[in-house]
Length: 359
Image 1: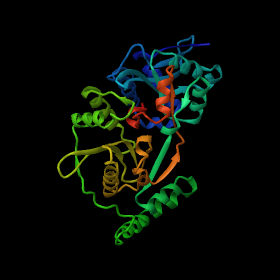
Image 2: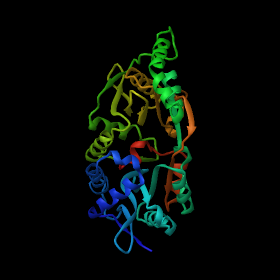
Image 3: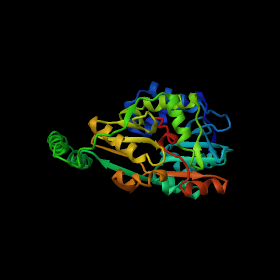
Image 4: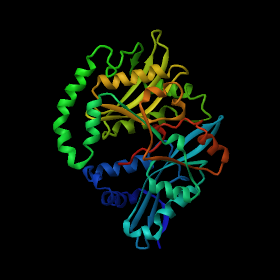
């Protein structure tokens, strides 16, 4: 029947092999790189806690047929420290799914000593399993916004997702770029973002740490970082190249007062993924305007990100299309007040606090 046990360093080669079999796209990443990724995220993260290990499902013959990554985090609610565990990269050999190996992994995870369990960017099948085991979907943290910046290229990129139309989309892209460039030159064109009055600053880790501390004070549940943990996390997301180059920008007014900040992956050839936006009260509009102009100026065809509850007031009209995501934020806790805080939208939970994407 197999058993669930803590993931250890010696298991990494088997887990990498399992991942390469189940996720063909990971074959483009060398086994050595994948080995280092599992080692970094699961054993060398700054929140490492032996009481909150990643998990494997092991057969009687020692073969590993399932894996669930677990990364501890620290958050605070009304000043009280919370132990948080973020699950990621659940995978089970197809021939062992009938044995409920995935259920055993998730049950073991949810029964751990953490105050809050989370899963970010979860798919429908994980959502169903999670809810059957007593978890919940945080619907307010499962909405996404899409902001086209070059409309012709954006539409063509959507068309190009259909395999039969992909060659046409590639051939037509240069023409669409010309059309978008001409449209941006029209006086008062809605396709040319206004030059922001605020200035951009390349922030240090200490600057971002101060922003996260000050500008999340109005949230009942918020992440706790120090210089070491934030530096490690930023290095980790910087190494993730599939979405583009990480941009870290702090926005200041004419008196050099910090208005807010944003982190996003710049993808000049496609859509750019926003990881985090933060701002002073009443300054969110200006920070979003700066993000839009920065991305447009660097050639991206559009932006997308999670529409967190704290971003909905005022500046929400600037985010463009708002849709329920095909991926979900899942939560579980034995503390009802903690779940209620999240379901009311009173938590600071960006993509930076979510899945670290092992591969």
